[in-house]
Length: 636
Image (cartoon, rainbow, N blue to C red; front, side, top):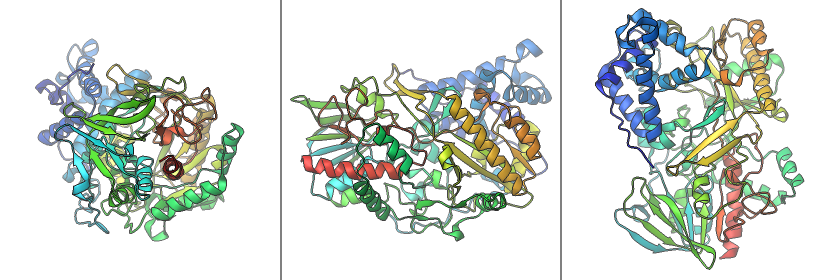
């Protein structure tokens, strides 16, 4: 049952938030603009409004609890103690040895820091050209035909052959491939359609509007890991970094050992078809810079194999804002490619509604009922086949509510947990002048480590660096000299998706010892790469021991077993929660991706993969969606 928690802060909460901003980001030599209360309050309100009710509740309760936390020590509330004591208190909480205090403080700071740093005059003080994308025009504007895109205003009942739920890497491909074969397709998308005009110019707005729950989805556990998920036409492909890999051979071999059939020739043909459709190619050298050049220098000195990664780009101009939607429509995501193809072939698209019920007839899936998130008119779609492409996380409650009782549903989740290191370089890096995830180190893939680049605007870099107070201001004032690079781990199936009391999914994740060792190994390698590249200082994602001026210093920490609760990780690829299998006892869908329990109901998204891929999954999902569409066409 949903609880209404307003997003507007009370006057007391505003006072707490402003005191936190001043304590967290004190004025420095360059970064010295006083917080603008109107701007901060407006940004906080928008961020809270994009969250789920429980997310808002956590943030607002957190502010109230922090207000009272100083009473035992100073006999006064946080807003009433001196600025010096406020700064010291915030720092002690952010670096607390108690994980629950440290994580709670950092959770609050994830909304506090951007609220101030997102102001353009503040961005200018750290040297970031916030206006650099204001006049960027699309390479070729993509407009969806209004006669085939619908926003539900009154209840409707329609008929089609195939109802596809979701328009990401799975749903968009299935819809286009079927529609182009003359099959009548209806697409249902929970999010809305966004154009390049709204992308990248305001990263905060993209997080609020294009990410599920304002990019606050989190897997609770040891450690807790944020897993941002897209929610718009195009799904997560709209806001990912565009990196494209085929399923590695070692992974296919592992699937065969499980008895799954792998027709390599057919799968290769599917990959080739997708790669051509979305213009997959290695990133050209002129689009690389920033952190990529730093890593290339260090990797070369270490004798490592390194180079450009393949991405789905056509007309890329190094905007560096892939995670906030491409402002040029150059990233060939589903909203640019397969969704328009499906519509051109006659498919229909309904946006802003959530599918919640699968209709049945004679024991088979026979359609879908969908309504807006907050309730209202309903869309009833009668169909011969239903395809769930909701994603590995949102898809679990949907399938569970519609007859899938398999014990495997929601289990076996892998997430590719990722860690990063920031480095302070002697030269200006200007990390935005690069292609996100456009460069990599290849030597360690067989160890389950995939090294890829990363960089984000200052207001979100601020979240990645856990510092507060003078230390934080000093780091942000050196923003132009910051390089950031990361890696992800091919992990064990240690996650699980549950259905909450309000019907929404929630996740848990318990990292295994093996994966924890992989993280340690990855940090060791990356620390050496940065110091070989002449880094003056690096910042490890380990609470309490972040700063290091030498490789010896960093390795003294990394030679010891890691405490998972001290790690700052993120993940981006939830997989495996409805895995395919050769029998009902072993999984949720069969090798043709039809659910074992409900004939006519198919699952085509990242949840079908029986193991971690170890590489970015969008291309693999699209290839399997192409394969699934061929099978579905034969059924009709």
